[in-house]
Image 1 (tube, rainbow, N blue to C red):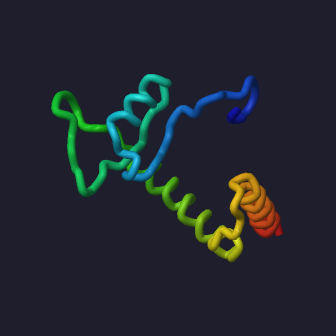
Image 2 (cartoon, rainbow, N blue to C red):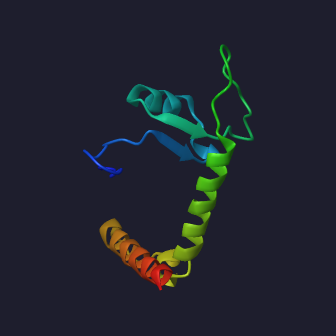
Length: 112
């Protein structure tokens, strides 16, 4: 997936990924590090583990809070579409089309 960022060629990977604490796994952090992507992952509250050697994991709390807020708002808007929250569609491709239509409707509402 290409990510457009201003002028020039599109990037094929982001500079930073902000995800929930459910994705706090060594394998995921190592994968992102190999790809040159910064991980902004909150430490799993049930685990609260730190690396055995070295410094603790990086977490930009301000960025993490703003991104989490945006994600939660998006899901609140999507849940307004009952068909999507119940998921009547059996095929993932049809479900994706309905998500895209809902996003277009939300975008048009915001523009007004």
